[in-house]
Length: 464
Image (cartoon, rainbow, N blue to C red; front, side):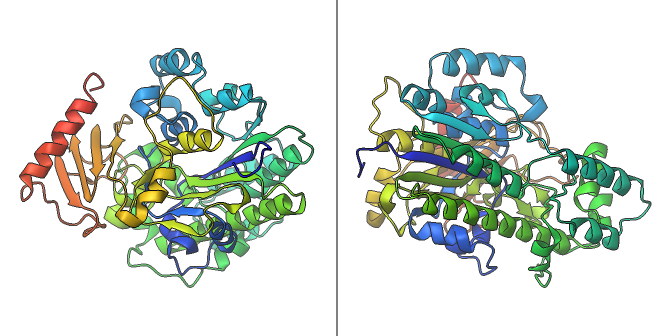
């Protein structure tokens, strides 16, 4: 550490955010001037991976430095069963192996603003849960009632409601403005060093930012544009179909929903700009370790999947990782060759703090990734998978150097959400030459496939 004073730690996860939609990752959409500005003071990892496409296992991985199979949470939301919670509680929580628990012992005030209310809420000194706003909640309830009762989706009705000064959402979650305003209130008078965990949801469906943000991108067109009616008609699962009806309300074509997604990024970026300005004005910015990450990406028409992340394609597993160290150490560094993973976040924080612990992690500190990047990067294995939600079957995979291999552990069947088959029984892609995963090389490169298959079977033995 540059200073003898303990740095503040701010960990921000942005749900379903694709890196290629940010300027600092090469996007031309101008969605993220404030994140791009922070990136100039930071290390940007061009190749960062998530181990899973579900928020709950990934957030638990971020807060423990362990793969989902190690910490025990392998489902998402209501599908998380009692056995998983017991394993996590006995093996991880009871041994004080989580980042918040370690920082609690070091005198940090651990704060979390996250509306989901999962098992890791008990790890923090303060955990927000869903923030209360009576005026917003009342208007939102009225809005949701009306759009479900109106016989036809109305762009005019949607636009009128979204133009109101309140942050009105189709589903009950805390908007970026509510979250960032609450974060500033929390840390304004904190005396001890703090660890602040912020979870932003606006880039997750229903992509529901204020209308002025969507209008910024109304001229954006994509090659995946289809009628919303056609998209809804092909969804076989009744519950998911109803959910997508709400998410696409007021739109005739899917490009209008992508414009909302871009607007949601821009909305989050504006609010993060407010947070960064507050940190600078109060003198907290320099001595803060700030991490921005997405828990996974999103499919916006690629591979036939719209507005979801229930498969293991690059668009889903590739995620954002930006780390600003105190006093902007490593400022302007771009790691292009070494592959990072969200499992590396906790080991990186603890190494920076020079904290010695009596147990290991599945992740590594990113310092070695930075130092070796100009020499071709570090070779490592990144495991992903366990489609435990049984949307399209159980699948596991591995990324090693330029190769990405995955295999199914259940019979191949059409996806319950899309009605199409997303993956073959075995897949092998050269993701350096074929990042869109169009050419399955499992038959042409049988030796490589065999080697990676063996690594998966060895790693997951006992978990299959």
